[in-house]
Every structure is written in structure tokens, then in C-alpha cells.
Length: 562
Image 1 (cartoon, rainbow, N blue to C red):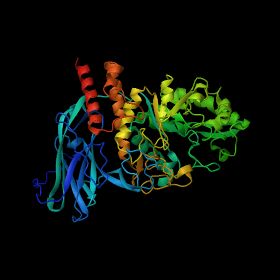
Image 2: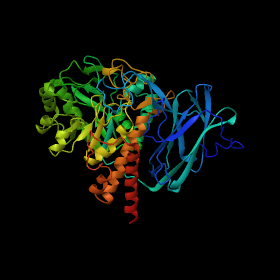
Image 3: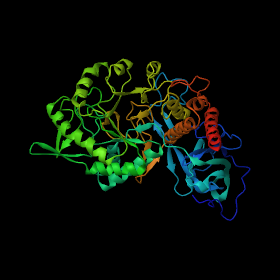
Image 4: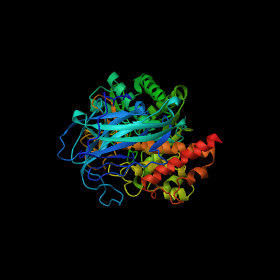
């Protein structure tokens, strides 16, 4: 948006009789509608600060009185940061299941309703606001060149018919002339290629599908996702037993004279996109079905659906395929992919699945010797038995691991709905952002979430329109299944939660850098909340959270200047 967009010959005066209310507020506020959010925290006169290539955010909350006409308003930016800024309208989505029945006291809402989540790019500089409730505009500021560092002003003006100024606020920003180091841990939110082909009704791996894949992978990188679930074969995840999700198989598999013949050309195209976008890791699709590891993934051999729910995990023919496929795949990746490669056996084995998981693992153990195998597993007893090579532990089950001296990967999903961090629409944003400092404080090597863009009902029985259904048909809490929305033109529309998760990862990057410049104890002390920080205990004080990050940045700058 051009810096001079506000200038139209003159600047209209603020209408003193206007019944419009407005507040410049922080990204950790959620503008729900009935009440005014708190004003943005200005620390030493600066509303937001950060580093080059770090997306800084603010919100303008506005309430038009009910007698105001429904219609377009104009958003105009001026000031030295105007050329670095982009505005989104914060749109509401229906949430049929916002919270568990026994929700803790920190949920913002527990009743079904429409709540803010989508960040819709403005069409030009006009925005439609609904009178009678608080609405929000989300402003991102991104500086990428060293010449853009320094102190900036950004004036956000909302005008109505005839140029009448309805709201005007000036934010003060500070951009440091340095860049945060890359994220030092693995951050993966499972990418579902079939959601794209299904929602947009395009043929799998057509040019249209590849363009969508690139667009949404780029959005994942904006969230600082640095590892991507790769459909070497259709991932056997969140699929009802006996059914099959749309086949998205990158590796071509044929058979000739009793031998398997492999084609990695589509995989190479996928790897090329990941490399260009800056991904540093890939996850190979799970080798066995979810919830027990009892069956094989849906795999095409030629046009034949040879493997799937109908073929047991221990079937000798599947072992014959794996003997051809896995060594060849590992050798190909060693030659064509410089990043990390993560492998999965099956997801979350529990007590009743233990023997099936062991049997499935035995099918591939020799073929994966020396590979990095990670799986969700929340039982310390199973982990210590070596059931899973590298367990990924639910955040509400991690304390026994920490007490035993482990520093495990962690994940959260729908079940982690009390006290711990999560990204549900009904939760305060600080409960998503705190994850960054938690991962640093407890030295987690990685974080996993199952749903970057799962636009289906539970078990993938039918697709949903995520603008109309945020709860996967009802069983999941709103926002659990996805963090991004499918824009009508094939663009990726972020959610509020998408932006806050990126900020959480930026916090982790800043803390990691400070630890390198000084030591880990120094960095941790700034966010440890007097030794009370855990995965289930943390401050909800927005100002304190923002001040902590500002203190981390100040120590980084001091160390660099020393």
C-alpha cells in the first residue's frame, strides 16, 4: 500500500460528533465484539519492535454505532512505515464447539457463536465493517532491507462517506538492523495436499494443484513451519477404517517382471519447491495406518490400489515392496535433499496397540537403520522400553518425561484443552504465543501439530468449507484442524492464530540467539516468570509477555554492541 494513499488533496478533520469508538491494540488481544480491547502497550514510546524479516503486528479496533449505515469504509496508511505495512480485515467464522464442557477459566468464550479468526486481505483500501459491535483491522509491518531499519511512524486512518474521518491512530515502531537466526528446532504442522485438490476441485498434481501446493507451502513458511509432511505415498492419517482419502502419491510405483520400478520425478518437484521456500526438513508419510499400525497405507502400483486397509501391516508382499522402496528412497534423498529427513512408523500407539506397533516396526526396522524415526507417544513407560525411537509427547503428559531427565519433542491437538498451550479460536492469543518460550525453556527439539490445512470432517469422510465449519463436522474444537483458509482466488488467507504462532517461533529464535550471545540461563531468566513457567503454568498478562520479549531484544542488542 503506497505511503501517500491517505493524501487526497487535504486531510479531513476528525468529526467531533462521530459516534465511532476506536482503539489501537496489540496482536495478543482478540476483538470479540461486545467489549473494547485494551489499548496497545507502548514501552518507552514504542508500540511494537523487532528485527528485519520479522513480521510485526498491531490491530485497529473500531465500533460503529448501530445507527451507522452498513457500507464500505476506507483505510489509509501514512507515515514512514506505510510502505512496509499491509492491512487485513479480521473476519468472523462460525464455531459450533469452541471449548470442552469442563473448560478452564482462561477460555474467552464457551458458547457456540461467530468469532474472529480469518485475516482477509483488503480489496484495495476499502473495508466493510458491521455496525453495533467491535471489529478489527490487522496491520502487518515487514521490513526486509537494512535501509528500512530504524524508528518509524504508522498512521492508520479510517474514513467514511465524504471523507469523514472515523478513526485515526499513530503507532510508533522500531526495527532493529539485524536478522534473527533461523529457527533452531523443528516446527511441523502437517500439510494435507488432498485438501487443496479437493477444495479447489483440481486434478491431483495438475499444474493448478502444483501452484496451490507452492502457495500454501509458502504460507506455512510464513508461520515458520520448517518441516513438511511429504506424501511420498498417501499419508494414512485421519482416515476412517475401510475408507480412502484422495490419492496423493508422489512416488510412481510400477511392477515389471516381478520387480518394483520407482519414479521419483514428482518427488523431486516437491523437494525443489521446499528447497526454494526454505524448508529444512521433510517428514516421510507414515509407513502404517494410524490408531494401531494394523494395516498398510493406500499405495498405488500402476493403477492398482494394491495396499491399504485391506492389507495387514505384516503382509509379506508389503515387506517385498518396502525392501525395494525404502533403500531406493533413502539413497535418492541422500543425493537430492540436503535437509533433515524424519520417518514415521505409526501415530500414537497406546497400550492396546503396543504389540501391533512392535510388529509393524519390525517390518521396517532393518530398512530404517540409522534413520531418524519419530512418532507421537505419551507414555513414559513405553518410551523407556524403546517402543518409539524418538517420542513426541503431548504437552499435558510431558512432566514425567522432564522429571526423568528427558527433553522430548512435544505436540498438542484437540485433547490438550486444559491449562496447556493450544491454538483454538476460543483461547486468548497469549496461549498460542507462549509455546515459543516453553519450547526454549524446556529444550524441546521440535514441535508437531497435525493440522495445517485439514478441511474435512473427522476421519476425512467428507470435505468442509472452513469458512463455514471450523470444527471438522463437530467433534473438534474450533481451529484445531487448520490454521489457514483457502482464499477464493487460490491464495492462502492466514488466521489470527497463524500470525501468533509465527510470533511464538520468533520469540524462540530471539531466545536462542541471546543464549548463544550470552548463555542459556541469562535468556531463560527473562521469560521464566520467577521459576514458575511450565507447560501448564504461564502468565496471561499481555503487557508482561510483550515486555519480556522487548527485554530479550534489548539484551541481544547490548551483547552485539559490546
